[in-house]
Image 1 (cartoon, rainbow, N blue to C red):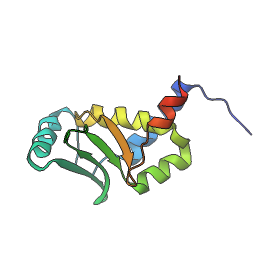
Image 2 (tube, rainbow, N blue to C red):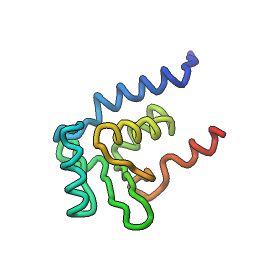
Image 3 (cartoon, helix red, strand yellow):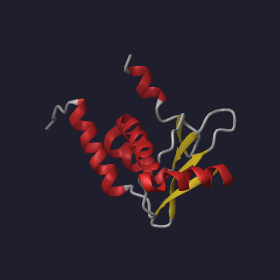
Image 4 (tube, one colour):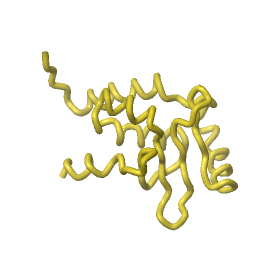
Length: 122
C-alpha cells in the first residue's frame, strides 16, 4: 500500500524521529551555544556523541567553510527510512539546537548530503 505524504508532514515526521533518536548524550540548547563556540575556537571541532559513540561532528571554517559530518550509523538509519529527504531537516535541527552554522554537510565518506536534493528541487 502506498501513501502520499506532503512535504510538510514528511518533514514533521523526520524531525520527530530525529528528536527521539539522535539527541546527543550531553544536552544542548541555547544555554550551551557559547560552550560549543568556545570549544570549536579552541580545538577546531566538536564531536557530538550518542551512547558514547561519535554521531556527528562540527568542524571549524578553515577557509573552505564550516562543515557538519554525519557518521555512518546515523546516515544509514536515516537513509533507510527517509531516503535523502532527512538531510535538510537534520541540518536545520542541528543548527537550531547547537547554535552552529554548517556551510556544508557530508557523510563519513566525505560525500555531500545536501547536493542531490537541492539540485532536484529547482
